[in-house]
Image (cartoon, rainbow over all chains, first blue to last red; front, side):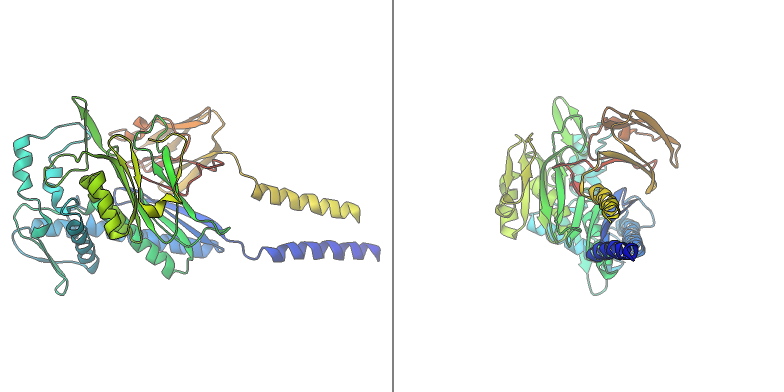
Length: 338
Length: 113
């Protein structure tokens, strides 16, 4: 009889503890290569199957978009638009119209500092082999740059580049847009918290298991040997973050750093910043504005962030860090500031 | 009774402590999104994985890791050098090495930039 009592006590104990942890949520992660970069999707879920299904669908959506937006692929809608520059408007998908309209609105807000028509000038630069383009060639190609020459007809779903030779490249906005769309898919599939990172363009929603916020590190623009060393971190809730820096693709010539963030007005790398991080609700906006603000420089860039009500971190060319008001209370710096 | 209770308590503590305490840093090696290896960063080891282009060699040494050899053309992954945190990705050969489970402040959900 006493043995039975012992067993009852032990079993009750086990059942009590199990009742405290019903279907515990875990974090699941999946990676894939698309949009010429590495994508990580993380979700909180209490079901392996639900998590897998949602992550696969989110990744498939990014892959689908990357086919539409690929500058280098003959079959993409972007290539179709570029081939028909100066010839005729082309009918494209709703997503292509959508992303181009968003890109044009960022161009207007940054007075052309972000411009998807920079492609012909960008093509002259070879950052991998460190080739400086001819000044005359840059000047000539600048004639083809100008977001005002992009015509979008939302009703007819057409896009037209007015000048022959013009090209659009959505590389400066597509990753953030992809993160937005992947988050939409995760939510539609019942995920209540997750994080999509398309390279450094990151969008988060909900809280991690344990009710903590997602924490995002900002890469140190002048890191040492330890790649991806961060200089600051901040919590991200229902927001996106993107960072543009002069360290991504660059070469040195006569002591000058030539990097890939070109000023669409000059055709040469913008000076004034080492890196710019932008935080707001939409990934497409953080992606495009981080480039636009970088090109505008620290002073005009900070003014633009404040005017639009976005948060941001600007590291200027001397390593001085400026923050918007909204970020001051939550950002944490690592010991070594850049 | 006491014995059973103690046995139960020790079993529960074992699982609880495993969950509550931070684990040491690990290196995860993935090929085409599939996890191939997860090994402690504290080990000294050289690991080889096969990607679509061929064999990538990863070296783990003294709490650091790097891509030591790669069949990709530009070898950008190799130039990234040693890492103690974050990740190195070889896009052409679809190989990613990533440090996870680092206790403390530097554990991030993602890195922007």
